Amino acid sequence: MLFDSSLRKELSRSFGVAVIVLVTVVMTMTLIRTLGMASRGSFNPSDVMLVMGYTVLAYLPTLLTMGLLIAIMATLSRMYGDHEMVIWMGSGCGLVSVLRSVSRFAWPVLAGVAVLALVILPWTNMRIEEMKSQYEKRSDIDRIEPGQFQESADGTRVFFVEKNNTHLQSGTHVFIAATESGKETMTSAQSGRIEILNGGRFIRLDRGQRLEVLPDVPDFKISEFEQYGLRVGNEVLNETQDRSVNTRTTFALLQNLNSVNLAELSWRMGLIFASINFVIIGVVSAGFNPRSGRSVNLLFALFSFIIYYNFLTLGQNWIATGRLSWGVLMISLHGGVFVTAVLWLIMYHNHWHPYRYGRSLFKGWLGQRPQGAL
Image (cartoon, rainbow, N blue to C red):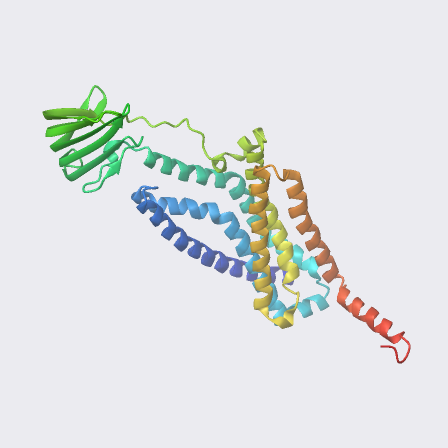
């Protein structure tokens, strides 16, 4: 059909442009935020681009839905403004035919949103969490930076090296402050180097002194040494800690339907239902008032998008805290929006305009009033 092919071709162009612009904006914002997190020590600076890529991939279901809505609104608003829709509707193509053609274009995008929300989203969150965890659990030696005070992984030691050589294998003017078994120690040395003994990593300090302060004791102990060895941690990372709920697979969430898992499941399922509802909303709202201009309809759709996703976040929090059940949220929010959009579509498809009937009833009521009545 000519209408179907021309509409899908224009939708493809508008969708491609919208997604490219949205991804570019999100990448810029994500890059700035990731660089700030890397500067605070949350990520390895060398992994900034990788973290940014995973973050954008996590946002992709929302970006695809917004891009699809913008493409539908831009295409249909232009057709209404140029009176093309009047010609097509005069030839028998109503809003249901428009929705059918738009659905043929949108179903691959909706399928992609479903895959991203149910499979890719938890995987990207898990990869980001793993990189963050590995960087936080790196060994004490890897934390040492020349000229900077660095804290150990367990928070019991603070290291300082004024200058290092041969990739941190040796350094000068070493300072180590530690708290062990309630005892505070401060060790300084002219130089130090890393040695591996019996599978463990040690720092061998040369020509220094050690200050020990015991709790509840006013005295302190100072000792000098020519050589002193200090173990600086294990190389094995603990991977047994519980991960965040947004890193769990959808299958794992379904196996344990507690309030926290249901809240995360409502978010992922909500991304899919929202994308379906916005296809109908875009088709209906594009012809709401063609005389008001294209920007008004687009702003209405974008505000609807923002409000819808805010309700998704609010519903997720309510489910997690037990204030709302998962079924009530699915039926009231997504089901309510779907029914409202379908009724709106049927009303415009059949040219039912309640305000016209209300105006005619009002005029009839005025005509039946006695003369001279106020």
